[in-house]
Structure formats: structure tokens, C-alpha cells
Length: 363
Image (cartoon, helix red, strand yellow):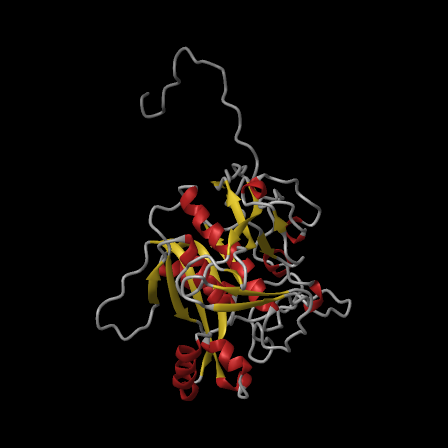
């Protein structure tokens, strides 16, 4: 039996599955390098960035030679939605996958531009970024930094900025997690139509809107933030007219958190700079506090989105495998003690008095 690994370097043939379970040496380039086996030990990347998280080419941001900085507040008209650009031409290999149980068919095509603005390549970036974000989110549980499972909540923002989102999350009671900023919402006059099309086609309603003739005109500027975080959340009184936040659901598994994050990353904004971020970690999930012992990648079988059965190549019984991010040994980083500022306290005197001097009131 032969397996096929779907990656950026084409199919990968192995005589059997057991022979592919041996670890291999790390190659230069980390997770972007081709694999000789399912495990490729590599140094932990800096998370939260566009280049490290999704393997997106640096060519997606055109820099004129000046050092650009992400503004504190993102204004309307200054950012574009992920996957709202032109789709690149498919090239290389094409694999047709079919589910042996329900007959669901999927076509896997290699897209090589690597731009986050490409409708096809942005999905690959969103999947890889969601794998890393979900692994770090669940790493807080493995490190025993949190007791209860994280929640997915959302709240509105007066301005689209990271500082405002962090402050609002802290006021609600979040102790750490992942922040995802969303500048847009679907307009009310188009929401019902795109939701109906999504139910019939099985596609994402935001992808349908971006690929339709309406395009970005189907969205309105409405800054809000999605948070997957731990904490003891603020109670909202019944009948209160003040909207604090909306509790969407509790994330019961890392796989569920990964799927939700991939959905959220699919319609966020593209970073303004090369090292910009469209999501950030905070609190106990920040890279300054939570760290894995090592990171790498492994191969996993492609599952059917309808019945979760393992899909095979059409016309054969060959399993279809893909590279997946893994991280082990999550632990909290011990923060060093800070030295007190100012002059050091004077040394204690070693002179011992035989008899204390009397006070004036005693005489």
C-alpha cells in the first residue's frame, strides 16, 4: 500500500505507513523544508507573525525600502481582507480525493504563489496558522496554567486596535488566549442571501461574498474582536441593555479550536507590514510566558468533511496524508526577579550596646 503526502513539494511515496514513522533531522528552513518522514524537529518559531505562522511569502507585502510600522489604530480603508485578491494559476500536481464511505469528492491542486491575498493560498496559510494558534492555546492546559477549557467570545470595539482589544478582554475577565481582530461584518441586506447559498453549497459565506460580483461592497465597517481565552468571565445581569460580550461556545477540544480559528482567520485583515500580525497572543498564552520544548511536523491522514472517514486517491486505495504542526513539552517560563530601583539599603550595624540609652522622658 502506498501513501501520498500532500505538501508544497508534491506527492510523497512511502512503501508502508510504519516506515514513515521514524524521526528525521531538521532541515534548514524549519517547517517550510521538505520532509523525509512525519516528524521534523525544528526550533520553535516566533508565533503571531505572518511569515512564521503561515509560511506566506514575503512578496505579499511590497516595501519601498522604508521601515513601516503598524499603526496603533487601524482606520477604515487602510486594510484589505484576507483572500480578497486575484487567484493564482494552479500548477504542479493535481490529486482527486474521494471518501470510500460517503463518496464525497475533493480536488487538491497545488498553488504556488504563497500570497495571503490569493483566495486559495490564503486557506493554506489559515490552516497552518490555526494549527499553531490552537496548539499554543491548548498548551496552557498542558502546562497547568489554566484549569477550565477556553471559551470563544466576541465583543464590539470603538476603534480597531490591539490595545483596545486587550483592555476590553482584561476587563471581561480573560487571563490569556488568542485575539483575532475583524474590521468588517456582512451588510444586513446581503446576510440572508449568503447564508442560504452557504447552506446549499457547503462553502463559507464570507468566501462566497468575496468571490461574488458584489465583492467587498457586501461588507460594512464594524470593528469587533473574537477571543479564545481562559479566565473567569464577567457576569452579565439579566435584562441589561449594555452589551458587554457574547459567549459563543466552550472549546472542548484542540481540533475544535483549530477549526474555529481557521474560520476566523479566513476573513480577517491582511497585515500592513511584512512582520505585521492579524492575531495576537496575550496573558498566559503569550510567548514570553508559555513555551514548548520543541516543535515539528508530522503526517496526518486527510479526513472527509462530511463523515470524518479517511479519504483515498480516486481510483486507488492510496491514503492521502498532509503535514501537520505539533508542539510538545509546554511549560511556563519562570520570570527572573526584578531588582529594586534606587540606592541599596544600608548594612545593619554590628555594634551591640550593653545598655540602651535612656529617653529624655525617662529622666
